[in-house]
Image (cartoon, rainbow, N blue to C red; front, side, top):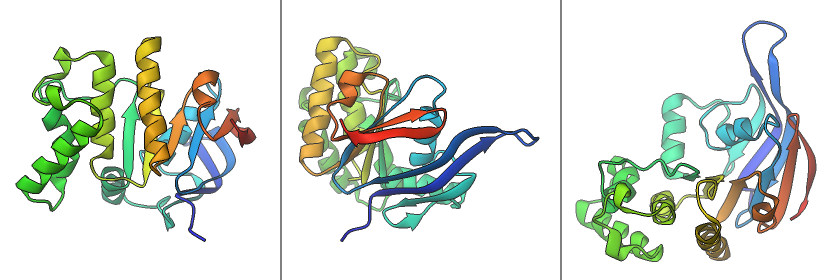
Length: 228
């Protein structure tokens, strides 16, 4: 039996140096299996953003273990976490986080600039991934020349470029209209159906219900974890 892609074991997160410290996550236990699609929901202040930062290796746990693909990354150095973020996690942000001065092709290429591939291999792979999200005819456009939905497709292509173990989506439709949101969510559905592991942070129950499993956070504690 394969190890979960994600395993949080008794995870706590505190902020502040002096007592009483702010206790944001309070003993989180959560496994996400390979190929599973999980949504994490909760109101403002529930701990969603803190949990996202931990899952994305943007921050470390205060107590407890975080195993990503079987490796305990909870005590990794900043350099080690940076390597994990580039190679093992594909990020899809609400605000797209594209570099405005770079074309679609160049934005998608950015994560590959730190790797060992040749220029020819990098070029081929970028075109292949851009085609997979339906943007072959836009590869030389700047983000300012794209619609919101197209920008999010670029962000998804960039997230896929290193074939990560985990896709981590943070309110991916938060800046999109209803029709465009549906297109982006359908694309994420398709990626899951292809075997991708997906964790989506969302406040929208309808978006959460597209996942296989819904995890609800309240005051830093998981209060419900079951089928969406």
